[in-house]
Image (cartoon, rainbow, N blue to C red; front, side, top):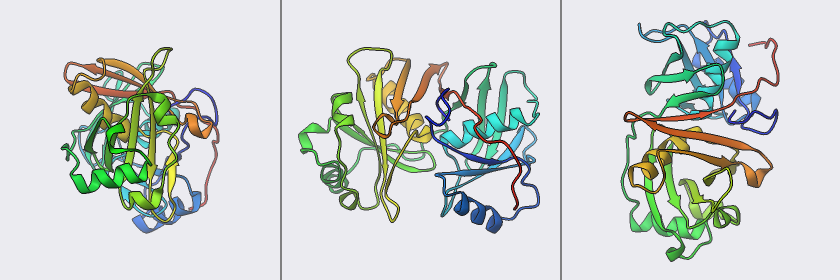
Length: 267
């Protein structure tokens, strides 16, 4: 997801026909895939939805996540799904109804409202500085950007600073952190990296939910234009590209999707 190059984005497993599976079976299968997320497509329960999706990490269920939304929409369309409204899919998930635009090219989801959007307090800001191994003055701004996952956004002065980070996950404790910095030129406007501490501490290749929150934060504060492209995954050898656009009050977060494996699974 978020790339048009096979194996250069963020992978996702999608079980297209998950009707009859219970939450325990879904969690077990998601744990087995060992991917950042696995999704399960189901008939909708809301009259306005085209399909319903449940999103699992290897350890828990999420109400919403970005690249699983685009990947699920991509798989639903490839499996023969026809949206009720031409050019727009409506996905039902734990966070409610999410609109997904498609025009035969990139898919883009409408960023859900932030359920927590406020400044980070001094204690957590100190954890961020320690975890990112940065002096406090190097952090230009921080904000909670919660739209399901509990992201904190950190703004740095440049893309180079973002790419040079060497994170101390233990110092971050339980804070999920997305860091963003502007490029000075070229075809990409921002560089993004996201870090998830815990037992399986890791950097995420491409993160739709964080980019959705960051877009609302940056565009709303005038730090980003109404339309921009962010790169993510560069430090991991990936080529993620997130296309952001603000239109009539909606923030659309989009990217390409590529099917790399297609088959049947035993569940």
